[in-house]
Length: 209
Length: 209
Image (cartoon, rainbow over all chains, first blue to last red; front, side):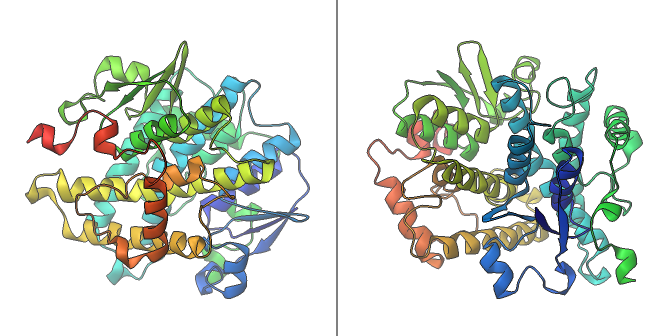
């Protein structure tokens, strides 16, 4: 399988880490996002949404990280939950992530780190930081007394919700303020085969420095 | 089935309209969001995420509109797509909605209409308005030459993505600026049994006036 992705993209990381932890053969195709790589006619033909990641598996072309994660767990029989109820719980946290976690953390980190300083609006940063803190507080409460977000084992739900939380750039996220999230991030990172996004996918701020 | 919901909630509308157009028996349970109804201990016991909607079907309690929509289409055999590929396409637009459409339109409309005027931050409104316009432009392009977002028939994907777009309050959304979305919204509203969110669920600004 081929995954169109780039290191700075937490959404891509959800797919890349799911492929890796489900023991799937895959190779990355670098998307040059910072030079307009998701805005070319060829890329928009691949994905009208103009986003990474895109997964190609033969003739099957999939976009949206949640769909790709669901496909990987179905194809591999791994990371997807053991029953219909567990699968719904997995899907619940995938939606929560897309709605409240990575959809906020992504733009917030982008604004605070990758926009020119004069375009970093303090009110927007404060707004997004407040939204993110609220979402993480819910996750931290849910993880109290639990090892994983959905069910008894690591699933794609954990891989979705953690996706932006390993990045080193400042986006007003302090792991130590969320003790259950802190422990859970360590537990995910201890999985055999786990890699940091900048090690798992091509492209990082260091490459562009 | 019982749906915990309120009229102003586009996320609730996705579930309520899916239940209605899939010909399911359901009744609404009013969530008094504007008086803290999603923050009570009892509600947080029902849904740690502190959000509406919540669907109760016997002992099954489901949260996240996307999970509820998926459950309704599975249970009814309606509105969910005809093949594995169509179901993935449906799921793709459900995630797109949660990531880029209703997750932006919801807070934007809330800030512009339901927050006290002194709390309506112009920079945040401009930021969210730009994000929403970008997301709707993609949807409008995708709907060019198509009747529905995913597949040949109306699905829960359409019901998700339209959820905030019928509301009368100003949130910098002008239907006429998106001709394909405008046509598609008319087509959804022409479905037998369709109702406006303020007619389908209890609670509206008029009730609080």
